[in-house]
Image 1 (tube, helix red, strand yellow):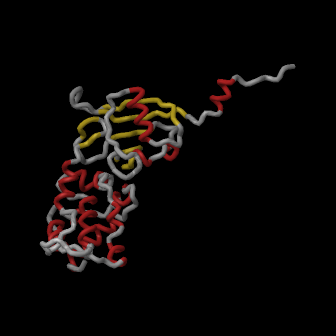
Image 2 (cartoon, helix red, strand yellow; image 1 turned 180 degrees about the vertical axis):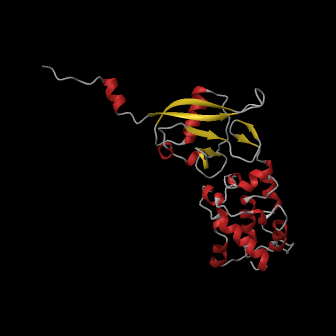
Image 3 (cartoon, one colour; image 1 turned 90 degrees about the vertical axis):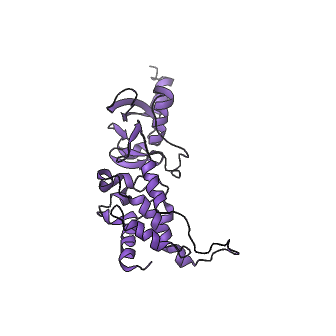
Amino acid sequence: MATPVMDKVEAESADSPYITVTFRVRRFNPEVSAEAVWEDFELEIDPKERVLDGLHKIKWDIDGTLTFRRSCAHGICGSDAMRINGKNRLACKTLIKDINPEKPITVEPIKGLTVLKDLVVDMEPFFQAYRDVMPFLITKDTNEPTRERFQTAEDRERFDDTTKCILCAACTSSCPVFWNDGQYFGPAAIVNAHRFIFDSRDEAGEQRLEILNDKDGVWRCRTTFNCTDACPRGIEVTKAIAEVKKALITRRF
């Protein structure tokens, strides 16, 4: 009796790394409706691929009107921050296999900022708060330096953690205070102020502290740790905010 031979197509199917995943995307188009709706897309995708890859498949192969931001796709530009299964994440760093692909994967825009279309939000309020804390080196010397400004390794270590911010807004848009009051500077702005307040070469620490001492500044923080949990770069955001509060009280930084 002849030995059964598996059909070539069936063999290839059995060896396929692909699985069927449902992406449940929150869609919003102000030109069509004032209300957002959920839309499901079924994909064949390798679970080792990223959520961003799934969004690309939807846009390129299923629905070209899907709108989202992305640039480097390697966790550096921060442009593809969104809520995935209810948590703020970077789509380019979130693997399908790590978020239970057996259930629908929900994708929606980050909270607290006006949605322009689908997964794209208006980032202007976020960047305005960033600009307001003067995120650049300021010195009293108006002349061009004749040599580099020296700094010890210990001084550099003091603010090393907050140099990692990529301005993705994942921390700020995870903050309940920011959701309820868009005037709050938010964690990202405070983190970037921290980066210069504690820089030994900078001479505008007092000025930045006064900015953050405002009613919409650092004292609005309720220490919920949402920001630290949401940061894709692992910055200890809540710790940085606490250090700014301490500097405001002691005037030592």
